[in-house]
Image (tube, rainbow, N blue to C red; front, side):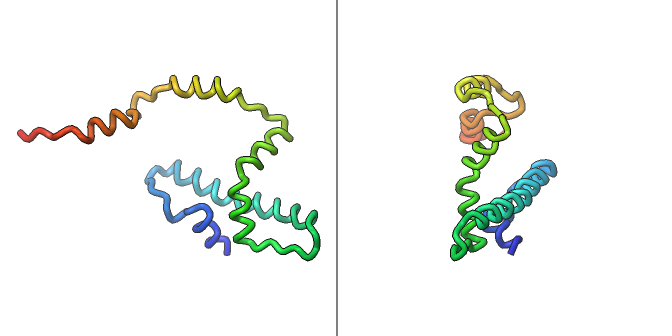
Length: 117
């Protein structure tokens, strides 16, 4: 059941990278998510009416669709305050990684005709 959930909800079979570090991060995130999801399901089940049923796959999809809100609420509860969004957008937009060309440059280079010698 766990592997089916990882495949359907977290698309583990769709990773297209050979970077070992990226693969590890994606795997850890995909493995931690169901653990947190199941713990939260236990809390929800305790609070819900006894006759309510929460199918595992439906719960996984619900958890995933609300993950951003859950992280936000958890961050507030733990006292985490991220930098203001506008400042973060301005700062990140100014960072240019020298070895990572922007999309327009990549497309321009890819669409130029090649000269044959």
